[in-house]
View 1 (cartoon, one colour):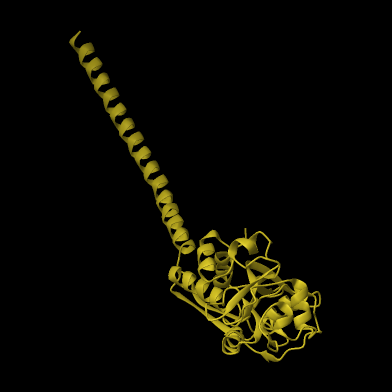
View 2: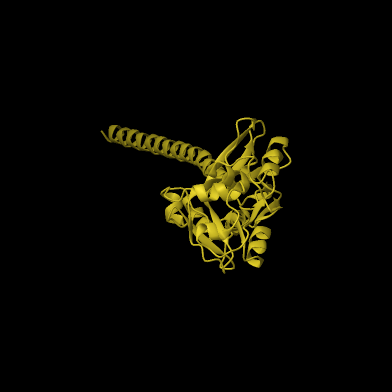
Length: 300
C-alpha cells in the first residue's frame, strides 16, 4: 500500500517536472519569436525614419534664371522667399530681355527663362508656365495734364498720327514716344494689345524698364510704357478707357493692357529637384503675397 502511494507521488512529481520544462521551453520559444519579430520592426522603423529625413532634407544647388527685365522685382521676391526656406540654394538672374530668356531656355544655358509675354508659335521645344500677371502702365511726365487715353489714342500716338499733346486736351508740346528695344516682352505686349506691331514710330528705344521710366521723368513731353510692378511716383500713370492699372483691374480683366509673367523651361531637359521645387513654390499660394509685394498680380 505504501509502495503504491510512493509510486503515485513519483509519477505526479515527474509530470509536474515535464510540464515545467515544457512551459519554460514554450515561453523561451515565444520570447525568441517576439525578439526575432522585434528586430525587423526596429530596422523598418529606422529605415522609415531615414527615408523621411531624405524627403525633408534641405535643398541645395544652383538655379540659373534670366530674361525679362520687367520681372526683376518679382523674381527677386520669389528668390528671397525660396532661399529663406532653403538657404543652401543659389538663384542667379540675368536681366537680358524676354527674347533672350526664351532663347536661353531653348539652348539650355538657363534652367528657367523669364518672359513677360506669351510664347509665340515658332518658339518650340519649350513650355511656358504663367506664374503671375502684369499690367503694362502707360506713363507720362508728372507735369503732363492728360489723365486718360483710349486704345485708339495710343495707337495713333505710337504710329505718329497724333504728334502734339494739344490734340489730346493737353499742353502744346510735341509728343516724345519712348519704347523698349525689339525683343522686349513689354514692347511685344504693348504693340500686340494696341494693334501697332511693326508700325511704331519711336523717338527712342531703350533696353531696360528703368531707363524708360527715367527718360519720361526727365522729359515733360514724353510718354511710354512700363510694367506696373516697376512704376513709382516719379512718373504719372494715365488711365486707359477710364481704368487705371491695379491688382484688381488686371485680375478682373477691366484693364486691357496686360500680359503674363512666364517661366520658360526646356521640354527635352528635366529640371533638377531644386529647380522643380522653385517652380512649384512660385505657383503656390505661399508665393502670392510675395508677388503682390513686388507689384505684380497673382493668378486668380
